[in-house]
Image (cartoon, rainbow, N blue to C red):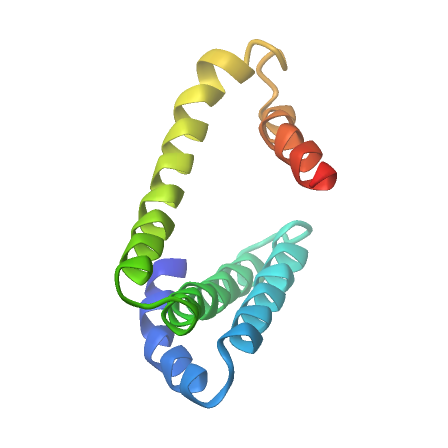
Length: 132
């Protein structure tokens, strides 16, 4: 579902990005994703989660398209290509590491509780970024 909304909203996000600055568009996208999180967590039934996931697609299109525009505005030539390559492959590698490390490494530590596994995977990054 978020992929379909993302694809459908990508052209609109591109048009909006042409009028706004990339930083403002990314901020709007992050705000919409936060609204997704606020609606998705307590939702029950079918309609609210569906609306929440649709918001994820809208916010995601602003963030991903805005990030590429921001890179193209800040960097030139080879630097731009390197930044886009790191941006594209970094998220894939991060997801791969998280998914492959969760079951064999984290689940035994949290005795199979999936909610604690999310917290355990995120906690080191929180400490790292709070210190920076």
